[in-house]
Image 1 (cartoon, rainbow, N blue to C red):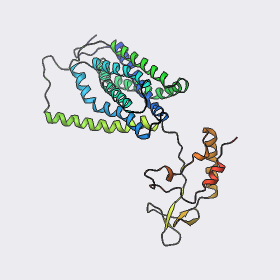
Image 2: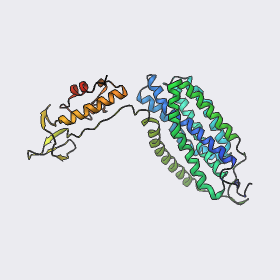
Image 3: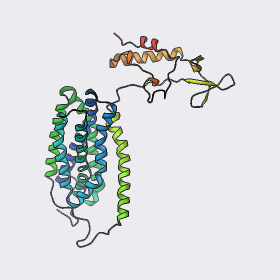
Image 4: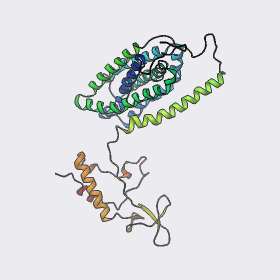
Length: 347
């Protein structure tokens, strides 16, 4: 039964709400599956800069267009804008298997993908809330959010299995089918223009132009900051957790403090080295204890054996830090030859 404010007055698990919930899960699944796309870019010879550009343009476009798509949804209908976004994403997914993973065509493709995403999230959530009894809004929003989090959890795991067994082309076909399914679910939701929760004939107050622009600018800035942090965690950290960093307790490069027992580190901290201090390369360095090097060699050997990593791929912080020269650890007293020799994989 429809109430005076245009809401469907029934339990929270009414059919239209469940349709929106399922569509939200499916489209979040599709978007999250692209966390694996940087692997395809790197395998095609792409650089880290190209990975950042190709993956980041999606979030930037999606965030910047949120205010525009929100206003469009209010003027037209939440369902119409969400359907447009779903149709856009469903139409674009197959092209990811046709274009080269590196180059401007895929950058434009990701940007258009962001346009579709910007048309979906807020309108679909707003549509779901208008299909929910007013006294169950918090519950409805919570369950709606859980559907997206569940997709975030399942999509990378399942997508990785799909790619490992059948390749990225199969992943894109699956994503396209899921996007089409989501579009069908939203299309089955009752249509109609959005109705304001106000008595007929009343006129909402108008905000001044400056106040409106300031509010929009604030929302955009917050959204960009949030999207940048969240996008970094989601899109970049996961696929590139393919290295293992091991920290050793060591004072590193030291400067005598004058009392003959304590030294200052490169950060100015006063310390009393646990191990012997030796001169090398015009500086004083704390040596690495025998027990410490033995434990490190055993750990590296276990890692090398389990993950099939050659000891030649072991590098120091000074070799990977950018710009070159920013880091100097582990220093000249570190026993690289011994570590590589004793860290060879078992068998």
